[in-house]
Length: 227
Ligand code: DX5
Ligand code: ZN
Image 1 (cartoon, rainbow, N blue to C red):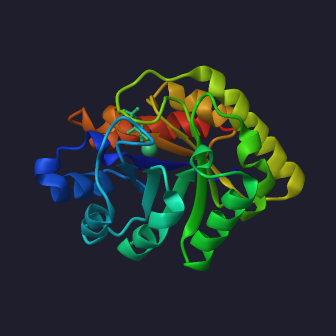
Image 2 (cartoon, protein in one colour; image 1 turned 135 degrees about the vertical axis):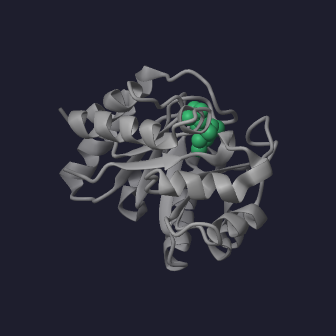
Image 3 (tube, rainbow, N blue to C red; image 1 turned 30 degrees about the vertical axis):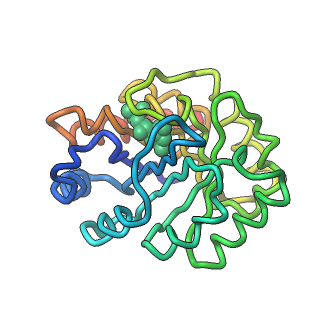
């Protein structure tokens, strides 16, 4: 069984006390810290850039799982690698075709960072399947990128299953992350389909028991993984 990793998204953290929040998430058992980067163009919302990623990097020792929701990821990827991203994912639909997806995944890896590719709920896995050999992580969005606290879209689990099947058939060791609307119940559905990395933003940070929420996601995923 692949190790289940829980990646709390700081999108729902209290930014007045970001250091305290990310340390609390780490102390509560987070395996990764998920950083949502939005440019107000690829998605209708704005968050932060490499400067905040660099600040978060100084606060925690767990790897940073950086999710770029931006229109020109190739242009900015180097800055996020330099800022301390340990995993850097971009949207396949934001770049121009499979050759560009392959080039950017390769470029991220060359920089010593784990490469990731994401797709929105209405986008096909065809956008990246031909680059699976260059991806360390695939991010299947279970909400439309842009905002925290949205409702989980179960239909995307079909894509999770297809990616896991292709990876097994091709002998590729890839992490599959589900991002959006993950909680103690939906985590089971994600893991059953083959996902092993669960992002949880509002479910963790909008509670007063981060450890309990992280544990709930992990335990429900561990019980259900590919069953
Ligand atoms: C959505 C982001 C997600 C989001 C998850 O654009 O990519 O990472 O913060 O938040 P929840 O867990 O609240 O759906
Ligand atoms: Zn995200």
